[in-house]
Image (cartoon, rainbow, N blue to C red):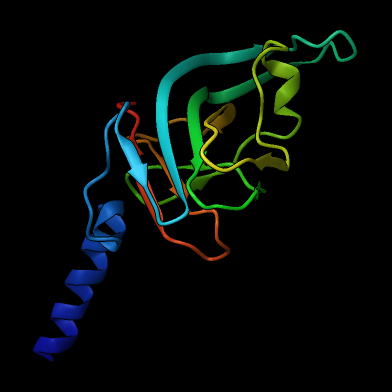
Length: 163
C-alpha cells in the first residue's frame, strides 16, 4: 500500500511540474539547448494578444482567440555532418503538462521575412531562424517551449518562456 501511495505521489508531481518527467530544469530564453544532432535557442517571445491580422497579400483573414497568441522566434543549428530535414516545429507546454501545437497557415500571420519550419532543410552547421505561432488557451500559465532533437523520437527539452 505504501508503494502504491508513493507511486501516485510521483505521478502527480510529474504532471504538475512538466520538467520533472525529464529530470532537467527548463532552459532560459537565450540559452542553447543542445542535442546530439542539433542546437536550439529561443531568441524572442511575443505575446501577440487575442487578435492576429494576416500579413499576406493573398489571405486577408483575421483570427481571434479566447486565450492569447504567442509567437516564438528561435534559431536551430544542425550539428551533424549531413543535411537534415526539419519536419515539425516545437510546441508549447503549460505547467499542467498540456501541449499546444502551432496554428495552421501560420506563415500568413508573420511578416514575409520571417520563416516558419514547414519542411525546411538544414545544412550542417548553418544556423537558421524560424518563427512559430501558437494559440494558447485562456488560463494556461507556466508556458515552456518544447524542443526536440532532429532524429525521429529524439530527446526533448523545454525553455521557460516567462509567460
